[in-house]
Length: 284
Image (cartoon, rainbow, N blue to C red):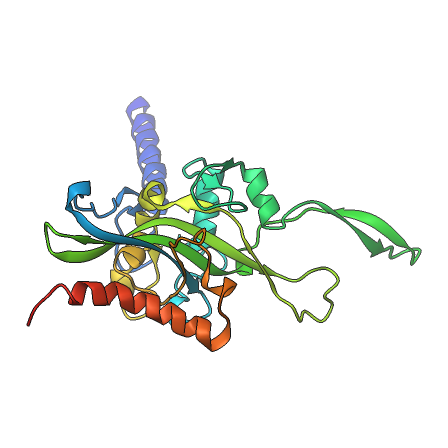
């Protein structure tokens, strides 16, 4: 009789263990995917200062409203373990994996920011608003806690350096920093006629590569071959336009001396000068 009870007890434990194992092995898809957090960024080739024959820094704007760039804007809420670009950067800053730098005065990564300062740059601060009381109908002050909304980021500024490597005879580029740009309207602008833009913070790209490589971007052609955020930037899978190049005039931006169509042509002229430099080195 004692053996029977022992056998029943062992059998019950096996049933419970099997049920727990079945629940733990739920796979949301046709197969179990590998852990993306272990993915590492593609190593960059070593570059000696003596091999740099020519270089130029430029600043670009990536507009997330363009169709090719929308993979960086969506999903606006976490979905299937995926985040959009700005949400990933903000989460990395919150977890202490990334350092945010103040974007008010310069873009040289001098002044680190706390997460509370990042929230303030997003406009996600606690405000006092007048709200109508349901019972009395009177307007009463009420504190409203602000939250970071990724939807307000419609552009990114990319700081990068182009250089010609005489050792390999190639023109290459290295991304140096990334800066989200927030779009908003002033409280007095009821009709939302004048959009305001503000650089939120700078992130040093080499520091962010591990995090960007471990998170994937949706591929609408083949979801079995999703790229990472690091791949998108490294392989230049985005559209952008130049807004500034390093110059003698305190690195002034194009908008400070040109506007409209002229500014657009100046941007294209700077971009062409980079590629023309490489082409002019060759003889045919």
